[in-house]
Image 1 (cartoon, rainbow, N blue to C red):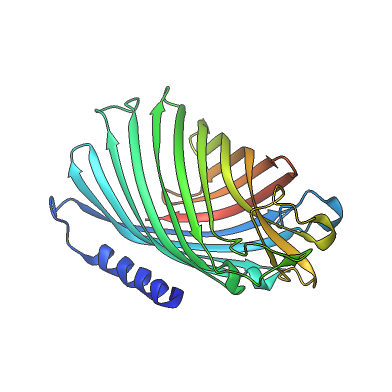
Image 2: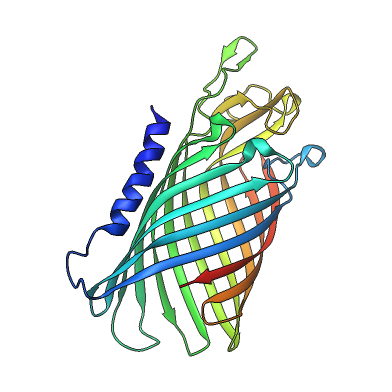
Length: 302
């Protein structure tokens, strides 16, 4: 598959969708400009259960979304954006990446008033370019969220998301004379989310969330940790992105539980500074790992 062609296709499609005129209510349009500069720390970026080979990483993430809102009815609107993000790694430059895609999101509010429930349905096709060619490819994310304000300070939201990733095949691995599947980065997952937001002060918002996910991950370990049993993994490749020859990355389906907490402080009407922390607990029959992620970001929305 010509991934370079597909990446160019997504960029062109983004520009077309942003610039096309609205099919209805053309006078009810609003431009979207979202900018974010984020820093993230990951204490187990290779998703392993072996403490001695865990790798932590510092990541800079710039994000830009450009597009338009279209008012379909009084309580329904469509948001179309072109989304571009990067990931610049401090230690493992082979993981540096750039993602370009398009998000279409349809939002419906079921009445008038702050406590009226709402629903949002979205789909995002994108292309992920990574310095390590095995990891680049097509991404697709789609799902929905349903939310409601409980009172003037507290609101809740629940959601479901399906994600699909198609990567490139790595070098074939042979263990004890057996040839294994090498499509480690062909992955899919289902995810359910629950989020609480509470307005502590006029300018300060606190959030807490829980996420359950079932699907594929890629875990990287030394050779001695994989024994060649089909019960242990679905696919495997040689992988040296962490600078160590002889390591393997394998694909396995796991269940993960994630608890997250965040604070957002409004600097102006259009900008905010945000801090967040998440703890991930993932497991299957042969693997159990923990992951802690923390970061902060500066956001500007116009």
